[in-house]
Image 1 (spheres, rainbow, N blue to C red):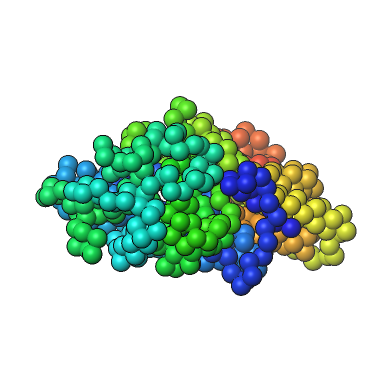
Image 2: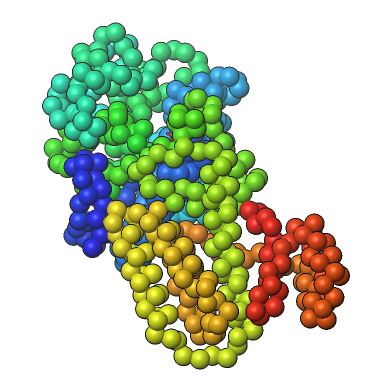
Length: 470
Ligand code: AMP
């Protein structure tokens, strides 16, 4: 039974299969004005796993993500570079897609650019105006009236009075009815660099929150199953989304389950484009493989913050290396212990336990951290007897471990031992068997300087690269 922690109710809830059998999942996409960093990656790696695991449970998932391609931060950057805002937006959208591709975060069904939804945005704002939830400030913009939605704050548990502390520039106006009122549509000020659309509500651009509800209403309708994003978006962004959509449609709840990932921090501060304390995905991948980043993310509970440092990247690298080394050793033994015997019952029992632990963890609010611990338990268990396993047992173990790694989006690519190293290994083995220990030690040293270690096992030498991050 799958349970998911719902930020709205503040507790884990049993996930009820949607009536139509399909799960509609929306996750806030990036504001494209700079390169994608590993903080973004944390959120998207996790939701990629959510989609993978839900699909594994035989749910059909439609995963929608917006791209915020109109925003004052994009305009600011465009002004700095003296180009049009869309040049910036398309450039960094491209970076984002490239980063996700490198990480094999490939589960989004549909991306929706905000600028492709201007008619839907206008439609929603028109409804909000007609229902008295929005009001016009001449020569300024159209604002959502927080007093018209008494439930404002139900997701973040903040009051309307506290709403004022998270306002971005577009939401500022001295003529607003309430300090926390947020902008739905900003009228064109005449500033040459400002993007605008000619609409029946006037010439202008959309506020940030309205794009998401316009996109989801068009694709999913007024209500859907799961909304995800980083915890930084809970307030005011998601709170504003609830206010807009529930006011516009009158249907509640707008979203069944709200899921929020914890922030990736650096020295206690959120990694962010605006603070400039970020490591891009591109840069991270110059040193480490995508699997290391994924493991670093997933070994932490998704709701907990991660304090990023080079130390934790190195720890993840070692952990991933151990998993790969175990699988490589299985391969190594498989080539020698070729006789296919029966599967011993205790191995079957251990693997069943491994499966149960992995799935139990994943069904308990996608506890990837616990799911990853289950790999270490099984590896420790089989490590002790690895050289006595027969081919049938090895295939069975391999398949189970690789399947579960794949469910977490972790792909197994075993490092290839170059022919030159393999030959040196064989030569050394021969020397050892001839008791030429000095020469054999010299060869070990030579291989060491070439970046390979040798482990003498009951089945011969097992060779392994010292650095498998790339
Ligand atoms: P943005 O482009 O800043 O709007 O962010 C896009 C998505 O990435 C949102 O869901 C954010 O919550 C998430 N995000 C941004 N920075 C971080 C971070 N440091 N840690 C975790 N998630 C983040």
